[in-house]
Image 1 (cartoon, rainbow, N blue to C red):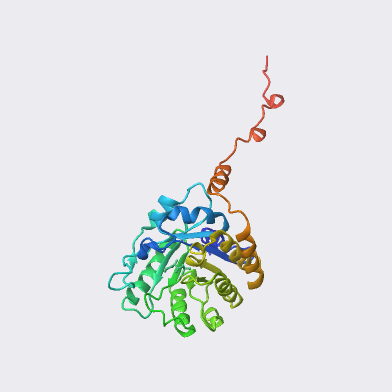
Image 2: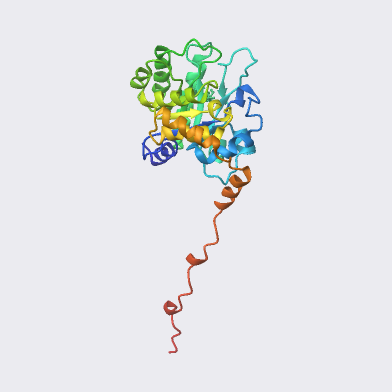
Length: 300
Ligand code: 5RP
């Protein structure tokens, strides 16, 4: 595997523990102003420092994320349908590789809709995207989307969809947790990350994250269960404790409750932290005048 590809994957799946905590905020690409994500910057800013990478569209990246904050970007490059349109599966690639590079994406994300009317189009698009992205050492994350259907999320269906994504060359697959999830992981030769799905009570969402990892997922790419929580920062920190801290559900939920009681960190403090990552004047490491090694005047 090329150095660039390996390095970018390592920004998403941390090599220290082979785990990934992604924050998904790409929902607006087909849902519009989703509840609690109406003002993306407001939702994203306090969470940025707690996730390993951020999954979003180029529009939200450019308008709502501070470019000085070093969070790696997983850029959604598919779209074309809306929740009120005829068919959610009718997606195309909407972002050029040039723009993805300009935006310093560390991976590209797109959806495939296996079993839908447009399955061929989305699967062929995945294959093409992988070919193009690999030329530049950029990994592709394939999302096995299920459209408006929710009855299809069993291990048989998800194994099929994940395997097809991996066969087309996806470097990471994002899918949904289900009963017998080990079977989905076992038959997919690339790392699997799970989506959180619809908002559920915090403890249940932590259990979902825990069970996914126990069954072999390398991490989570959660959205609604974090920023639709009444306490988004405590929630992402509790999810982090599961993903990177090997916490069990009880410990993570206890942490969540404890953090909820603490004073929330004000946005101004987050801004202060961003300010602090500006390169400082490092007077002490400026090369000193080294008079003694200056070539001497040769009077001859
Ligand atoms: C939609 C996506 C979303 O990013 C995904 O659903 C993750 O968000 P959530 O945890 O809210 O389900 O890829 O296709």
